[in-house]
Length: 135
Image (cartoon, rainbow, N blue to C red; front, side, top):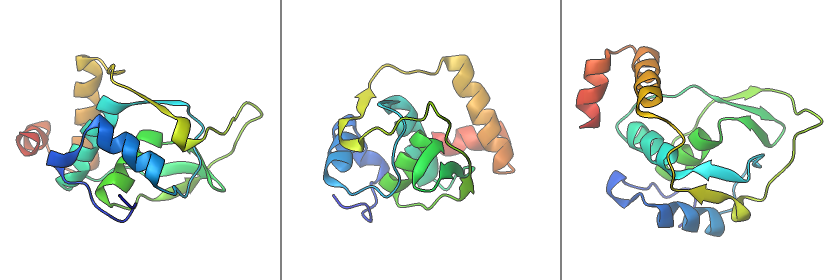
């Protein structure tokens, strides 16, 4: 699958994500060697129904903040804004093809509720409206 192909909500799976990363030339470099598949899945679902997200932070072609959003945006064919940031001496580049996508959810239910509220606010809607769209 090439980066320009959109992934429909029904198609998203851990296998699709890992295949996409292995088969694609991804423009921006990662600084993470592990990412959380359930987070990517949630963001893909939201993006696919039109929920907007804040931009990612980059230094040249290196992602500083926003790895999950960036990858989800590639999967669903959405362009995110990029905001300048700075690498630190501790910044280490990871090859996308070796990133480990873990199935364990890094967010608790309470954290997911907080993120959903933030997403609703960012999109100028109520949490109830967002929840209805996510059904």
